[in-house]
Amino acid sequence: MTPDKVLRPLKPLPNLIFMSRWLQLPLYLGLIVAQGIYVWVFWQELFHLVLATFGNADSLTHLLDAVTVEGGVRPTKPNETVLMLVVLGLIDVVMISNLLIMVIVGGYETFVSRMGLQNHPDQPEWLSSVNASVLKVKLATAIIGISSIHLLKTFINAAHHDDKVIIAQVAIHITFLLSAIAIAASDRLMPHPTPGKNH
Image 1 (spheres, helix red, strand yellow):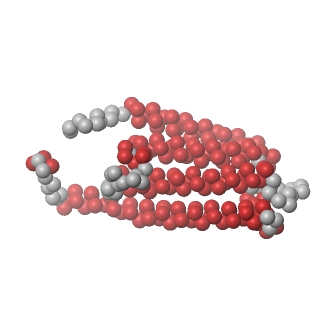
Image 2 (cartoon, rainbow, N blue to C red; image 1 turned 30 degrees about the horizontal axis):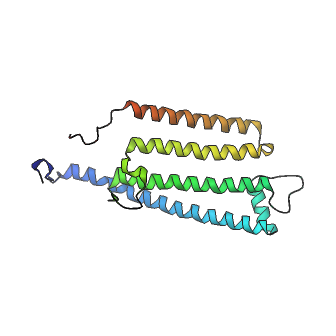
Image 3 (cartoon, rainbow, N blue to C red; image 1 turned 180 degrees about the horizontal axis):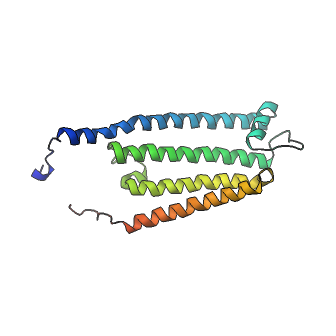
């Protein structure tokens, strides 16, 4: 180990400030609990979809209420539109779950402590180059994907939504898109360290 690599003990105040990063640990543990809740919701909705497909009236009512199919004659089994809306809802849960994983793993690795996943066969490809800036861009992209699913669900079920609601959702989606472009552009303008260069 070269002299410049020798670890020197921190003074008490800097050490306290540096150790304060571990206060984020309960937050990430809380997000893991939220991830578990999303898994439960996913399987619950999938269970209702299977039962409704085989004619269970209570499960069908649950699905129709969830996708805002109101008034008129309700189908006795999930039709193509209902199936599409329910599946899009399941995809939405998966994408939010992916977002949670990015925040939990990427945030912990960036702001709390190294996880030592180098050369691990299951290391996410994006984690090898993650930093606060890259994490922001990836989160913005994930949010756009989630917003797209919500917008598609609204368009498919447009008859049950007010025009103002649809316009507001489109405006919000465009705002997310422009924000992601601005974040990505800002990241490109910022100086990045050259790989292999000694600092």
